[in-house]
Amino acid sequence: MTDMSRVGEVRVLIVDDQAPFREAMRMVVDVTDGFVCVGEARTGVEAVELAASLRPDLVLIDVQMPVMDGLEATQRICRHNSAVRVFVLSTHESGDFEGPATAAGAAAFLPKSLFGMEVLSATWDRVGPDTEQAHQPERHPG
Image (cartoon, rainbow, N blue to C red; front, side, top):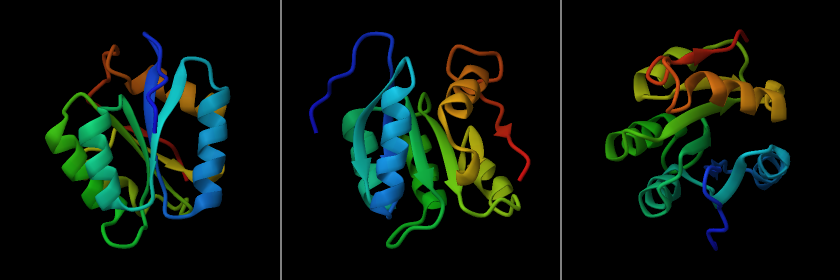
């Protein structure tokens, strides 16, 4: 995938095993000012590989995927790039994955039902690299 990012844009890697949700996330990223999608992955293994080569600022990753789940992938991605922010997404709004996501290194846990332009921008504003809370996880009630 060609890197079309411009200076100052948040470079985003999208990770989900389901094509419809990857497409939906890409649409949100594409219409959100200051964000650009630099790659997509279908598995945690692909996510780890692409995160290493593309060096995104932000990874949007699903919790449940085949081969390697989003939590293990998050841990590996964060271990190799401490500057990256990972937002873990799930269809489960109960918060069952919030603690494990935080423990894996995620900056935020977001229920998929809440994901949109406003949530993406607001969450990045709170936990992005230029904020006081850059290393404190963002939590959204589920």
